[in-house]
Length: 411
Image (cartoon, rainbow, N blue to C red; front, side):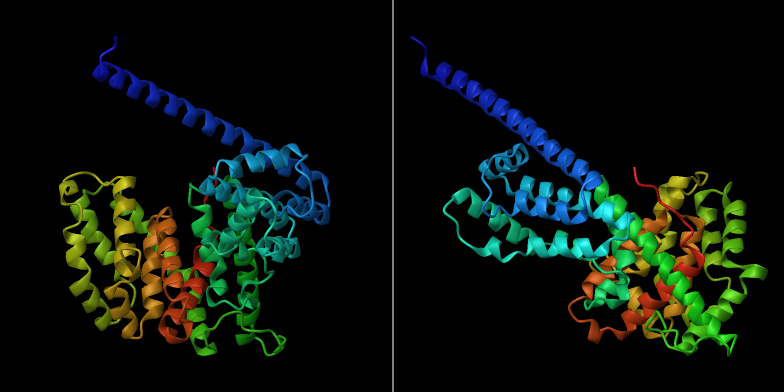
């Protein structure tokens, strides 16, 4: 007779092994089902018209009157039957981006809008005779209310300025956070990179055409200002740009990088202070930085002080400076940013951030993530944050002029 304690131990071990096997098998089945769905969509997006692709997408996910006779539908329902909402959400998200990525590259934005309309089809709110169909429709409704759905909306308009939502004016910045996030499906990252590039190129062209009015009375006066910045500020920015040929910020950054590459970390930080304040900043601005930023920089990574500067040290330092100058723990505006902006210095703050990115291009990933956080923080009350709107508008203009030739690969 087997002792209860031994049986219990053996039973627990056996049950644990069985559970582990079931989990492993379920994961394998999910992955197989997902790959079948993705492969099918990748196939039809290349061969079918957008209209027919949308019709098939609706057939697969909305489930109107169609019987469960498709292998792809069975794969979808394998996830639904398992009651794994998270896996379904990811599957639907990637399925959408397989279509969106194709249409973004071909500039067929109206079909992206139609895709969004399918996800909001009234049929998803109807009750059916099948609990599984009701579960599927409920998950579709949940997806349509999620942050991932809002991110999809950024692709649906031909010009980001035309969208009603305040933060959609800054779609390229928000899209950058999508293509820099390695957790996103590759299709989403590619679509985000391509759409952001399209929007930035268009903005840069529109800005150049509008600013050309300042030099020639013969330029069409009907050309619209692509920004929310007044002409006086644009003229100031234009004067700054005019200095690029003599002693530009890019040249300054190159000189700084060459002269500091062999320095130890402590010496580098001192050189960094001089570099950041070497181009006409006001005394009040300089004093604010010295009072609120320099002591943080002095105490940063003190264990590295005697070591020669490396790329890793440079990136970590620039990322920290960006955090101090933009957001407080990636949640809300930092006290330093609010202080500098309150002095009427949004342009000077943007130039400071530009200087940082020009000596460390990978730091732009952190900068755009922080600015995106600021945009999302103020999304619900844009009318109460004129100072932030002004800052982000100037940020968009300056980086379009100086830094939008920087590229970040998606792998």
